[in-house]
Length: 264
Ligand SMILES: NC(=O)c1ccc[n+]([C@@H]2O[C@H](COP(=O)([O-])OP(=O)(O)OC[C@H]3O[C@@H](n4cnc5c(N)ncnc54)[C@H](OP(=O)(O)O)[C@@H]3O)[C@@H](O)[C@H]2O)c1
Image (cartoon, rainbow, N blue to C red):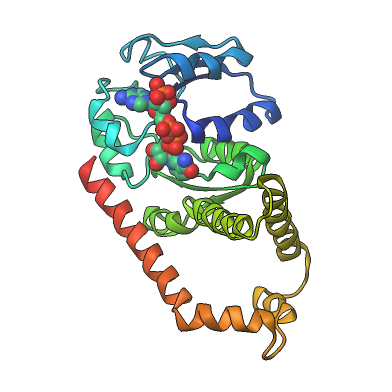
């Protein structure tokens, strides 16, 4: 299968190598990035071909992956891909309809992955145009299972609405990790120890989330005795409206998904 990547940033690099390793399908890989550097790095393990210009070979690919930022869609010079080419888009917010019109091609698969895919622990949401064959859809769903959960959305709207939690979610947890580490460093813990503590805190807690039969609330309650230490911290979160703030942040992220769709 001849596959071309337009943009080889963090997300493409986290998502595709595991799939290539685990599928029996042979891939011939080509990649384009404006500077060429990340395309070269991405192609190296597969003896892939670095595409020098945006208009090179555009009709010979079986699959084209759009891995750049949604705002860059307007810079993209290719106006048409062959009708048999499947276009896999990672572009947040950009609708199947818009991509069909933009590339005069009906075979669009939209993805919303997340970066833990790099370690086989990602979530990849999938939504496809009705014109995409069932066999193709099954193939790609299985391909992304090698990177974690691969979920076929009921419709595109569901993919957009889940994006702020699954696509962006790792960033919120990394931000919390950073805040904890700063707090520990202010208590004179070294960079190394504070980093180790936070990593084990997240790894240990997520291992419990995944393996314990208790639901999340019960797990929380088991660490929280009435009027105890943890209780006081949780009361502060409640008083400051943590749940409300989180809901508002997710709504704001969704509004940006909608805006990106309009702007591109
Ligand atoms: N990061 C995430 O967690 C995440 C999660 C879900 C979805 N996504 C989606 O994944 C896509 C890529 O995000 P990312 O985080 O991987 O971005 P990134 O790391 O900044 O990578 C963007 C890539 O696009 C290339 N590029 C820039 N302008 C281009 C153009 N005009 N034509 C073709 N390629 C171009 C860049 O080239 P250079 O290498 O030369 O700079 C780079 O390789 C976005 O659409 C985003 O919505 C990201």
